[in-house]
Length: 239
Image (tube, rainbow, N blue to C red; front, side):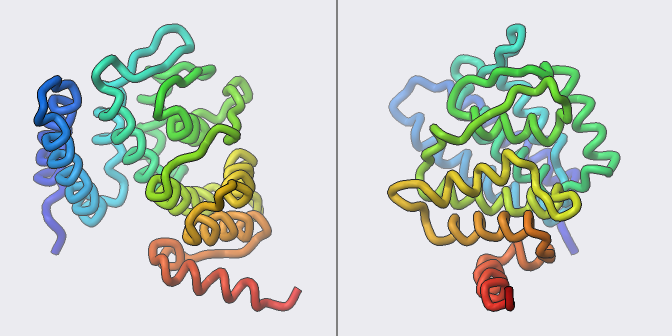
């Protein structure tokens, strides 16, 4: 039986506050405080997902408390850059598995639109993550287009990002087609020099496969070995 969601939520909110505090420290022990808080956030995030598959309200609360909106410009508040980056990553992770027709998604969308302008111009290290969140929550022709040309993350960040976007592709693909910005992410990542980790290449190829009409189950996406096996199976299919 999973742990009570309300209990985990309170724990997460407490640790999130701790993380915000640690991110603004100017002392020598700041790195250790950030490391400890981040470790607790990661652990609680996994437990939250076991208790409730879409804890987006928690992540959105933290994110909105970390950003400054000035006209169309959206950036992290001074001293909260790290916390904004972590909160945006977790929010994207939660949104990726959320049914876009659900009431939870609708509530999240309304709250987000109430703060972030349609033509938001994101600045700072969370630029790409926020652009994806924006694309998922604001379906408007007025939304600014974004490119991946300057997206060159570290291997760990790239792998986590790609896995999340496979889930986005599965949930958002319509009539076998994924959003074009997501398709461009796959092409950009595959063509990077030096090449990204093999898991990133596999995930990007799976996004392209979804775009071509292939169906992937939830279990296929959540397990790395199954994603590799699925790609091998797709490759072996007759053309």
